[in-house]
Length: 84
Length: 84
Image 1 (cartoon, helix red, strand yellow):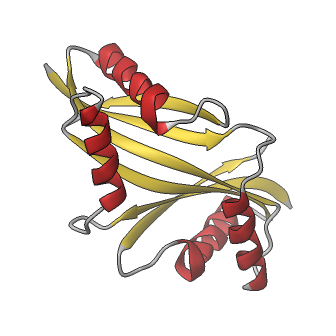
Image 2 (cartoon, rainbow over the protein chains, first blue to last red; image 1 turned 180 degrees about the vertical axis):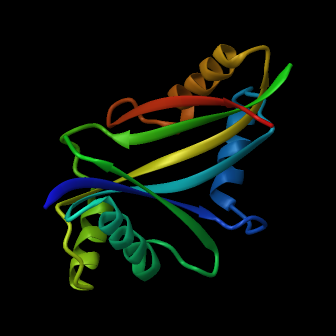
């Protein structure tokens, strides 16, 4: 078995309102910053032991399907790196 | 001016307790998943107009210093990409 870190990035689907991002954007604008748009995403870095990178990625995808992402409003992507 | 997306990734400093990550890890383990560790980070994707990538990155860093990250408990990194 090898140590991998699977990074799951969860973001709201296009068109779904993101009140947290809107509030953050307005706060930055009140501080005088100029920005066109702001999107917030959640990222989970998961350390797993797996036979290979594919297995680590599949397991992280299952974790996203079961808990980390709500399929109704979220999209997610998984990236896998071998741990030193 | 050119359109850039500056991505600010905010994570808790090493050694700072992460209750959200711990709760998530325990929930995954209750669902039968095996994992060594889990860390959660916040990511802000900020669309800005800037003269060049350095300026876009500097502005995003200032946004992190002023609002997005709490210097006492957070570290952050900034990555800049030109928008199509």
